[in-house]
Length: 120
Image (cartoon, rainbow, N blue to C red):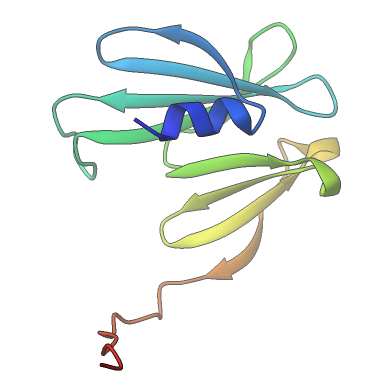
């Protein structure tokens, strides 16, 4: 599996493992923790057999942002923001106002699949 070593390479700390759940954490600039839950097993509604969910916790581990519907999230350290994907769009939350209203960066829902023809 390539994904887990890549997460560790990119600054995620692998904190726990069970048969159906692996948990990774990344500390944000203000001491909050972005937690990534990587689920595997039986497909859930709206998910295949592998999917991610996320939460942002304060330094004591209390959830301050529930990202259960985020299909991906990471910390953009240079801009001090959490970026995440939800319902076909990319959003950002500023670390200094982590429980504020997310800003939509781009909505991909209008994009349509187009087959690319090989040039040969």
